[in-house]
Image (cartoon, rainbow, N blue to C red; front, top):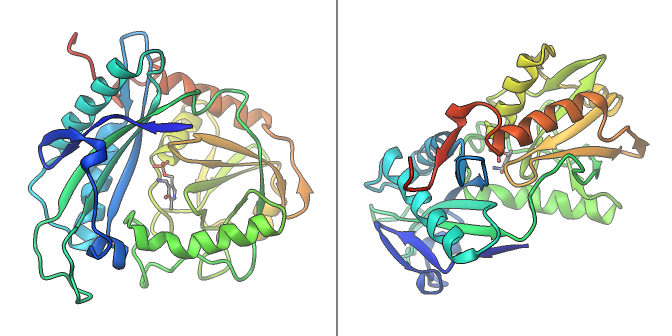
Length: 309
Ligand code: PMP
């Protein structure tokens, strides 16, 4: 369960989250033009820290640029805004110092045309406290389905690097189909029928001890994906960022999905086949990833929110 903190950052000021509303006729709502990014924060031995906040903000700025949402904020400002809302949320929230931080950019004016005439977007940064840790070595396993007709929009239809609200409608319908088929989630295929990614996570397979994941250019550059690749290579595991045929995925020894909020979900059932979940490679990566998020790994990945450093 995630609860939005009472205060959020909007266009440079802290305001009550309840006051940050958007009219139903806004372009963001009617056309789904809002862009966003979701990072996480965690307790560490040196205080609460954002995990890879710079990479999340860089991706957020790229999403806004792709969709044409201009605003005056740079990376430094938006990392500091996140640290500020998280520090406040943790102070007010008591026991929990684990949660998510969400950057959003959107047009809130009524825009009858498809292309908005207005040139400046609003930017909001909000913290959400989680009542339980988002991931542990006892990570919840999931059941995953693939369908020939559940595809990710190809790059020439929609750039996979942009996290825009409108891009999630196709994946939403595909996940609904997977749930109707008795699974928890869907892995979408790309234009060529190879594995792309799940609606809100990247896909990995372990095949003969090697870790496979589809290449960038067809999938969102997931920050957890990047962390997993770095950790796996450091562990001496061969990582193949290559086209992943659906049949190779289905026959994998282990498979998992990655996202900031999970962060690693071992797949226990894939198109009717049971898999060991978590398998030994998955577990090795998961333990290192959770250690890194909690301050026992790559120091450069952390941005502390406290005033004490
Ligand atoms: N793919 C898509 C389409 C997503 O929305 C997400 C969630 N941001 C991911 C992958 C995972 O990315 P990350 O690890 O940066 O959360």
